[in-house]
Image 1: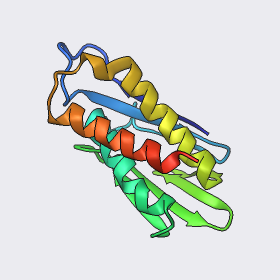
Image 2 (image 1 turned 60 degrees about the vertical axis):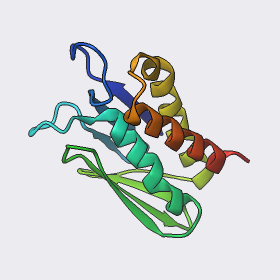
Image 3 (image 1 turned 180 degrees about the vertical axis):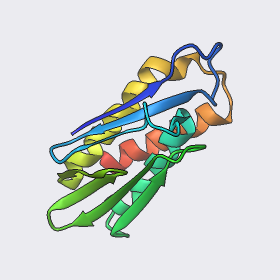
Length: 144
């Protein structure tokens, strides 16, 4: 599966409230927030933070499903755990079924890439701090 988190260009000076998009492409389909009507762009840093937090209980086996909705967006994903793995479903249907460790590693890599390429340009504030904390917690969860 390919997961990408991106900041939309042309928003002026970077802030924790920058709009961005998510792309999820798997063997069963895809889910994209960009190019939808109505617009499904989201506050990308707060949305990724929320995504990482909502996946904790699912990946720890405490719950069988998780629902994610982008911050200030109608973009939604559903994640369900089964014997086959974690099923990701987007607005138009199934995206992928992956083993939990592969799923978690893929999400972590996308969150790390967004942090590497954009987080340093944000002002030091609650949004950036929350992103870093969620990312660190997810790293610990994913670590072997």
